[in-house]
Structures are given as structure tokens and as C-alpha cells.
Length: 465
Ligand code: UDP
Image 1 (cartoon, rainbow, N blue to C red):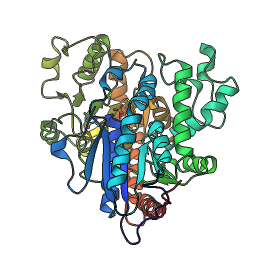
Image 2: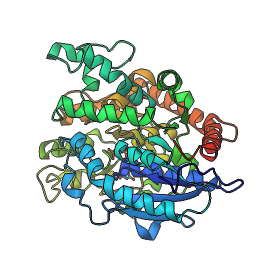
Image 3: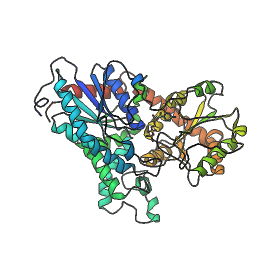
């Protein structure tokens, strides 16, 4: 497109970076953290976003622009509720619906831009937007909001399908190790029982394509955590890779929560003993059924350990109202607190928190690692099984709560984390990883160096691709 193509970045002027997150909490958070990091390095920043899950206008950072893409485009009707929804299909449809309005917005932004033509940082799930950007001569970088291990698994996915390894043909195969992807098994690559294999294959193909067609892949991880995986991605991808996480520790103060955070839990944590509290939270999308809610409540109460439990209003399937079991409140009084949404990063960083029962979304996993908090893992869908497997087998900073979610199983797991030697060893290793995360975000650390390289790359990108 004439307005962007063949223009060289104006000498000396900071380039404008357009950033377009996928409109879900776990994707908005790292993208807005990245926006803050790039802005702090002197780049000009515009955040594009859908009307669905738009960032709260009252808490937007000053100094950069927010632009709504397709104000009247419906998205909510595409989004399934709960852990059993077909999110892959939803992501493909979201791309289709946003493509034309994105093209309109991008054309307008290009006409307005007077300095160096902008570049676009796009979520790796938004391949459709990347195609539009390239058609208009706008170079792109891709943000992967998951682990390097996950991208590596996605890169291997088509070959595993061609070889007939995936999808698993029977129950016996589920436990089989995948060659070259230690410690992953076939079942860790079945991203959901309800998403058809073809839909998942298409989504993964587009994610990998978006990375390979970009001018660079930005990954919210750090090299001491995933060195081998990052090296394999660099070898296989053929484009620069920037490991610049944990982004939330670098971009302190980026506010991007879609739900109001109940901060009273921080006062409650202040009154608890150091390292004594189990934090329980399953992210922004995962859900449980009534039976699991009941078993979780009694498992926590019977463990006799202090706990802070996040129950989102929409996190219990088939219920408008969350009904905790009779007697639970009395049993947990003074020892447990339930909130509908927490300031999770601050909670995990609080000295009273000694363990995290998580669904292992990548943000939650990385936030826990950054604070040295060991985990009880209960992955639900998507990349969560991969993350949980790495927590248990590679970093050894937690363990998977296997089998049925019954109260005895939960109680045993909480005790294992807080009271057994194994749990103590996991805590020690988690603290070692915290130290490494702290080092990499210091001046001269690997993630800070990655950001330097990324900024240089952005400034030098040719405007016509
Ligand atoms: N989160 C939060 N408060 C809560 C629960 C979660 O602020 O009570 C944040 C959490 O810090 C993380 C994000 O929501 O940054 C969830 O992302 P993740 O990748 O862990 O899971 P997803 O929601 O994508 O399944």
C-alpha cells in the first residue's frame, strides 16, 4: 500500500509500534506489559483492541493511544464459556470477523502517521491481521504469550500428525513419550477433548505460520528457564527470537485487569504467617462443575491450611450463583478467604503465600515462578498440560493433581506441598528459579539485553515487506 510501502524510518524519530492483543485476559496482560516496556524505551505506542474485552478506559496509561477495531463487530457470541468450550474454533472465527475492520483501522492509522511508518506487534493467534498488515506494507513482529516449550511443541505438531503419532489412536498411546519433546506425552498434545483434531491443527498451523512469517518472535519467558527450548526454536524458526520475560516484572504498573480486583485480600494476607497460605486460582476462562466446587471446598477446609480462593462468577458450570456447601463458611472461618478476582501478581508476591494451586495458564505459571512459589497443577485445556508437565518434570517446582478432584485427593496434595519434605524441595528449587528470573531482568541480564535487541530491530525494520 502506497502510504506505508517504501518509506524509510525517519532518521532520529522514534518509530510508532502498533500492538494488537487477542481479546482475552491472558493475552491482553502480556501485550499491555510489552506496550509499557516499549514506551519506556522511547518508542511511540498505539494499542489496537476489539470492543469485546476492551481495556478499561479509566485505567489506561497516559502517553499512548488506544484505538478500537470494529466497534460494532460482535465477538462475545463466538466465545464459549468454561473449560469444555471449542476455543480453537472461536479463535479462527475471531480472526475472520476482525480482518476487515482491522484493515480499515490500519489504513486510517497509516494515513495519519507522519514520521517513520509504524510496525505491528500482533498476538500469534491473529494470523489474519498479520496477513492484512503485510498486504499494506506494514512489517510485523509476533508476541507469543505462552511458553517457549509450547511453541516448540506446536512446531513439531504437523510432523507428528503426518507420522500418525497424533491424534492418539487409543488409550494406551496417551501415555507414550513424544520423541524430541521430552517430557511431553501424547496426551499433553491433546489440547481439549471437545475440539476436533482438524480445527486444532488449523489453529496451530496458523500460529506457527504467523511466527515464521514475522520479522521476529517475542516470547514472554527467560533464557535461564527455557534455554534448550529457545535454542531449538531459533534453529527451526529462521527468524529472530526475543526472550524478554517475565514481562510483568519489567513493566511494573501496567494495569490491564478486565475484572475489578478485590484488594481486601492483601490486608487479610498481611495477618497470615509467612509462607502459610495456599493461593487457589484457575485463571480467566477455566471452569469446574458443582461437584468439583463442593469437593474443592471440603478439600481446602479439611487440609487445615490457610487459603485464598478465587471463584470467578462464571467459573462454575450451570449455575448463575455460586453455592458453597453448607457448613463450609463456619469450618473455614478465620482460615480461608474467597474472592471473585484477586490482584494475582501481588498475591503471589506476598510473603504469606507459600503455594499456588493453579490451572497453569502460562501467565499464572510465570508469575508463580517469578515469586518462587511452588505449585499444585490442575491443567484444564490448551497449553496448560504442557506447562504443568514442565513444572513437574523439568523445573520440579510442583506436581500435577492427578485423577478425580475429590476432597481426600485435594487434602493430600495440600499437605504434600506444605508439610512434606518433597514440597520443601520444590520450594527451594522455586526460589532458585526466582533468583534467576530476578537476575535476567536486571541491567545487562538476558531479558534486558533481549529488549535492547528488540528495540533495535523495531527501529531498523524496513517498512515495505
Ligand atoms: N488473574 C488476576 N486475578 C485473578 C486471577 C487471574 O489478575 O484472580 C490474572 C493472572 O495474574 C494472569 C491472568 O489473569 O495474568 C490469567 O492468565 P493465564 O495465562 O494464567 O490464564 P488464562 O486466563 O489465560 O487461562
